[in-house]
Image (cartoon, rainbow, N blue to C red):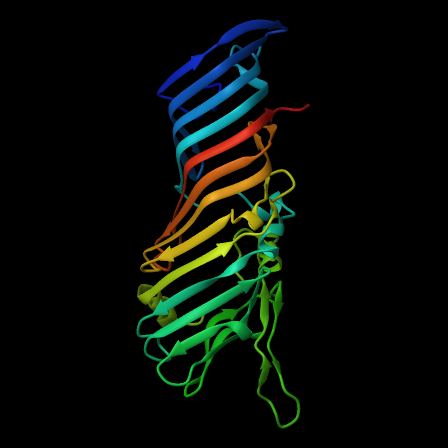
Length: 344
């Protein structure tokens, strides 16, 4: 199906009210009250996408046949409603996109994110079994509110210029993650008392929006540091993770590629995090993703839409086991309304 994408394929199609008419100057006008394509497959360097069904309502499009006789090219299209069912996108290689080149990034939704993550680590290296509760409020991790519970007096987690650490009553300070970057965006480091009182008075905070936007603005996938030691990497095999986050409203993406999320007050954009064994598979689900509009590009043409709704899941496997984890994005359904492709 070369009209869709040069590297795409489709298995079958069905429609109603289909009309095709010449529009002059080598252009053709296609209209359909309803159109359905099945068994679609798209390939891109480092990415493979499968779509079980793509449904279009009130479709109108203009195609133009190049003079060299190659496949017709899409010029403009309008769709009243578009729905994709059974979508699976999987990374097949190292991404070839430089996030910094797409920017600047605006992750407004992170500023309003709230919720908590809960980890249970069996046989942790500093004590026996540990339960960690990481609270997130208004897009900020406040380490003063983070709890590290275990047998005996509890420990405390914090962030300093050296990295993220745990202060255990009997074992002293143990670093979990060591910072190697000169600047850590969004970080407010711990503070200590003056004079004889040199104890920690504030364990620090991390602003998620500033932190992630800062990482994306640098070279591709550059991390601000590394795990403190290999023993800590081994604890991923003994870590169970659960959590629930509610994303804030606002833009998520760049100027040319973004969603504008909406509906936090109604309980939408709730993210459920789970991992029975963190090193094996981490799953993030958004059963009711909702956006008031979207903007992107396709085959060099700008694309915009009205309201967007989706049932989304993200699976990440092989954490800590190799240089590149296995990442798969799934969409049970994705619905977009009032879609326009092409310039005005």
